[in-house]
Amino acid sequence: MSQEHSEALLLRRTEAGVAWLTLNRPAARNALSVGLMAALGAALAEVADDASVRVVVIAANGPAFCAGHDLREMRANPGRDFTAALFTQCSALMTRIVRLPKPVIARVHGIATAAGCQLVASCDLAVAASDARFATPGVNIGLFCSTPMVALSRAVGRKAAMEMLLTGEMIDAARARELGLINRVVSPEALDAAVAAVAGQIAGKSALTLAIGKEAFYRQAEMDLDAAYRYAAEAMTRNMLARDAAEGIDAFLAKRAPVWTDS
Image: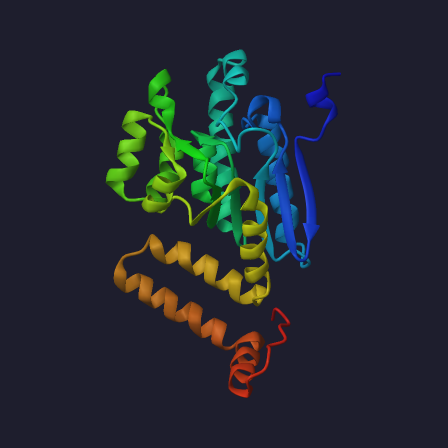
């Protein structure tokens, strides 16, 4: 048995309400094989129903965050059925991240390219090391990054997305932050602490409020203005009638810390 197959493709630990899901194919630059996507999808499904988990971090072992799809696996399975199933699986994984009722933060180091860049764009927040780099380079090998395009075009402006997609060029972390692909850039040695600080800050909020707010954010973004306001007003009404909203307002008025019940 090879070392890769003897080790878990995905590592998981939970600390202080934060589930750290770590891609663990370092020799393959954490390429999203069928197995790795299945493992990550299963872990996300589990944490969705785990009340002890309030925030999810997606990280990676080795020199890269994620180099995209596993090209060797794809070339070893050239048929239409495998290829269609692969991209359907990837799309379902990225959609699961967006629809997970808990915030998801990408902890990015090294390269995040093609589907790896898509993974970053699909997360709610992203914190990157200053030496991280990003690209959608499929055009360079005759395979336009069409599925990564879906997440990328929703994270950055159209012109910026098209430039990345048409040129395939790498951008550095500073440029990725300017474009809105990531939120923060820190030194490599400060990356874990920075991610933990953001995750911890969010984990201290009402889980119910976060779930309502995350769902509302993505749903209204796909609506026209009037529909978005109608939907957001209904979401806010539902939120206002929750116990945690009453507790939060009472705590604010009494100048004390709120005690969340996530209900």
